Amino acid sequence: MTRLRNIAIALAAPLLAIVFSLAVTSLVIQISGGSASDFISILFSWPADRLLVNIANQTSLIYLSALAAAVGFRMNLFNIGVEGQYRMAAYAGALFAGAAFLPGALNVIGALLVAVAVGAAWAGIAGLLRVTRGVSEVISTIMLNAIAITITGYLINTYGIKAGDSRRTEAIPESSQVPGWQPFDKAAGEVWTLGLLAVIAGVSFWLVLNKTRFGFDLRATGQSESAAIASGVNSKKMTMVTLLISGGIAGLIWMPSLFGSAHYYGTTFQAGLGFTGIAVALLGRNRALPIAFAALLFAYLNEQSNRLTIEAGISVEVIQITQGIIVLAVVIAYELVRRYRLRAEEREVAQAPRPGATTEEVSA
Image (cartoon, rainbow, N blue to C red; front, side, top):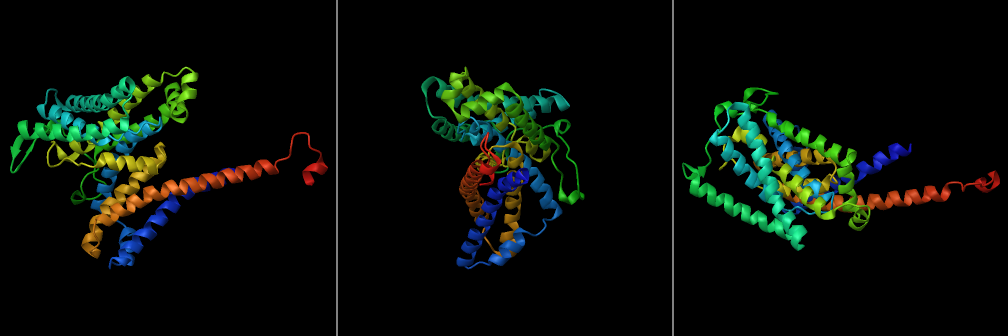
């Protein structure tokens, strides 16, 4: 009975947040002259096959981004630079894969390693500033985001191949393109095979954090740095390693898209995933399985936004409002649930019989 109650309490916070966000968004739409009923009906209608494929693909990218942010959050490090880290890594990975230094599958593996290394190195700059100069990782990673945008923009405009009015990297050779699988007809598109990187990363995230000494030290440092230091944890080393891991995961974010359908870095690059991942990590409470559901929710909302514009004339920004309210509401909901759980535990302790109490005392 207690276990069922704990599960219900754990599910209550995100469900309350989603219901609250939909109610507020519906109210905003109605006030602005739109139709809240159309918004709800379209939002909860079953997506077309093509949209289902897109949702699956986008979920893998958002999930990797959220894991990259969650690694830092679990140690109380706010890596706001996932956006810049995966941008630098995407460019480097696409550049390496397009150069075709290695044949076939080896080229894919090599590009993945390059992307991980570049993402880790870019996050490592913030880590180095933190442990050597005490610079807040929030400030340094935000600045590194802007620097990454400038650097990649300069490199692609200076050395990229001209394609119409834009520039791009060399396309990945056909032998290194990773075919996906088609759950529906050909017109619906393919689910990217390298989306499995998200599954591998999620399982690894859970295992490392919950089944290894490093994961225990990381969580302990996040909960109380002074207590962790007293128990022998090297906080500076943990900070550096954690940011390197976070950046390494960020380096993988765009790889499923690169090898699945984009095939080069340029107009096909999808920006903004880093910031989305931060919101999803917060919604999923920095835990592997809840983050997966949060990533699926955000991918679903993003794909349904186009239908809102076409079928109901509702701006796509409405979905961004919904997502933002969900994140804000979930913080409040988790706090309310935490207080309820605390009061329930206090009542149970107060009602529990004292050791050595007689039958008459217990019944009284």
